[in-house]
Length: 127
Image 1: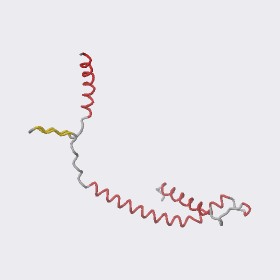
Image 2 (image 1 turned 120 degrees about the horizontal axis):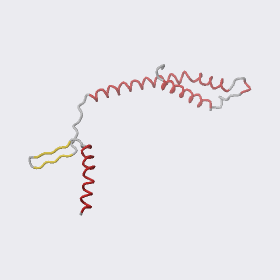
Image 3 (image 1 turned 135 degrees about the vertical axis):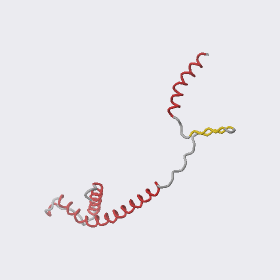
C-alpha cells in the first residue's frame, strides 16, 4: 500500500463513510460535556471501524488483483491472434482490370481539391 496512493485514498474514504454511517445511529451521539472534543470523537469512530473496513477492503483488493491478472492474461492472448484483414476502401473491376484502394490517400485528395477547386471555378465562371 506504500506505493499506491489510490489504495490509501480508497481505504481512508471507505473508513470515513462507514464511521459516518454508524454515527447517524441513536447510540452514537457526541456530547461536549462528557469531556471529549469532536475531533477525539471522530478519530475514535474511525479507529473503531477501521479493522472491519480494512478486512473487507483487503478481500476486495485480492479479488481486484485476480481480475487484473486474468485480464492481463486475456489481453496477452488476444495480441497473439492475427489481425483480421482490412477491407478495401474502393474496389473497381472492369473486365480483366482490377483497381483496389486499400486506404484513402488524404494528401492526394487535399492536393486535388486545392488545385482542382480554383480551376473548376475559373472554368465555370469563364463561360
